[in-house]
Length: 304
Image (cartoon, rainbow, N blue to C red; front, side, top):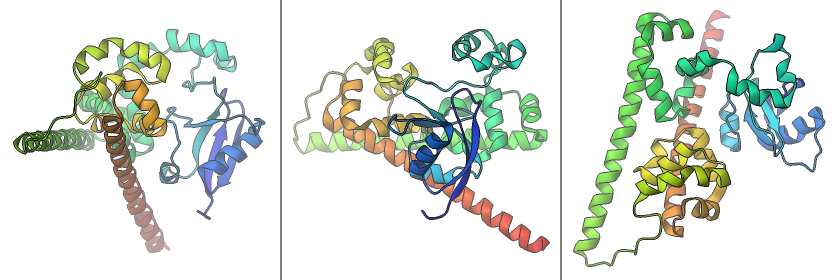
């Protein structure tokens, strides 16, 4: 933890930006607040400036590339993408950001894969952190247009889409394996004459609970789709993005019990699965970053 990580930090409007070198996420919050003029008593949330991913885990912070740009948010502030309207000055007003999100940049709505392509162009390891829905969007994207956005040749883009499809297939295989294991455990319990745990509200009819997902979202901060996956899907941890996994783990068992309406045992099992999935993805990112660093070091040695 003694090694300092060079990074950048900005405020909500992106008008102030500073370069820092910090050893940990806590130091980033403390020094970033000091540079941006925030009160030391006010809590702040750290997100990635380019896509709004919440950064709450020290291990994830260390996995990010050098000179990553972060945004510090107060309690009522929310991340918004950079928009260019009214000569590029509308973003200076906070209220205008809401208007921009509703009325501007309809091209990205027509091609949702464009933002994902920009993430891949910046760092290919972001594939590991994407949700299944994001991976499927990239797989279904037109190959030539995706190649142009990434700056790749057509063949390399096809290989990339095939790799993404294999990642989706792998997650599906893992999910099916867990389902088979669960069926085996239930059959063994019945054979041994063990009594099944009475179902709690929210365990049965998970599909019907999806109807009121928007109401729970208002109180919990989760988007509707995330709650639908958590309540109605088998092995939901494999379907969520890394940001969603971080939110679930950060909320803790007691909060998620209230959000999902489940008992303590079932909620604890879900959080353990989400934490294990999150750890696995971060370890994959670390491995890729380590390989990349070693390759760059070898290349520099050979050139010298």
